[in-house]
Image (cartoon, rainbow, N blue to C red):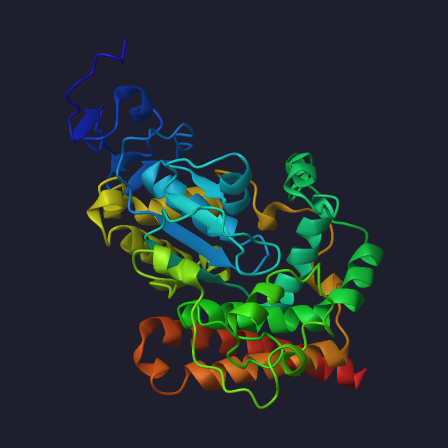
Length: 380
């Protein structure tokens, strides 16, 4: 009965409830829109999972170090617009589609630039480095430490359903955390600097040859990736950028820095949802699909307080954060990396940018928490 629809109203009203209906959306899809019930009230609805190919979306990459919290952000985008997100690996292996939101770990070795040249803007998710290491491992455990997309796909139903045995985490921690601390800071540098190619262990700008090797850490050992060995200690390297970034309309530098931890905070959460809504409203090609601003606090409440939508990292049962521990050496390395990032992005010319100020504020909060934990570890 919906196939013959030619004209769609921009707004419908039913028993006092308003539903924002973009002109590009057919009546079948309208049925899944989150509802504006008036007076700041709303009702969350799941997104439309079948995305038409003929809508011109302004598309957003949600980039972040592996940790599960990118999902916290894209479920907000889905609720605000009723359109779904797609993972970078699904673009690569299932094929291209018109999804307006793209979840990405790239350039981390758990990611891939699978979405071609369809993106328009980037937002960067920031999470506490220590907490990121815990959830990064736990997601790997959820998918059976899969090495391929095909294998990982078999375990997707396991995501966030339970905590792994502590012995599994500790074994991974001892093998990976000291290196991943560098990957964490390098990931932030990559996006903040618009895709400037750097070595993650020395922070030096690097060559395209070395960069391509860094993108294959399972092929090369850390010793084989050594900067002095591949590039040369005295080699002068001109700034060069990942060519992938030229395919994003606004480049790789994020238009916003978003904290999933803030989203979970009952005092700061609604403001973080508003930040996401305002990012989407930057361009009418996605902004026309965003539910009215009067509902944004309610959308936050539906997702966070009422637990609507997909399972997230915060639904995982079992151990709590305080059950996990890191050595003094690991915590010191985290603090060292945070100090580097805070000093860099707190100074000129970064200090004039809203994104850098937000980044420094978040990292400074995280540093305080990690310093407190280090003090406790050293005190025995």
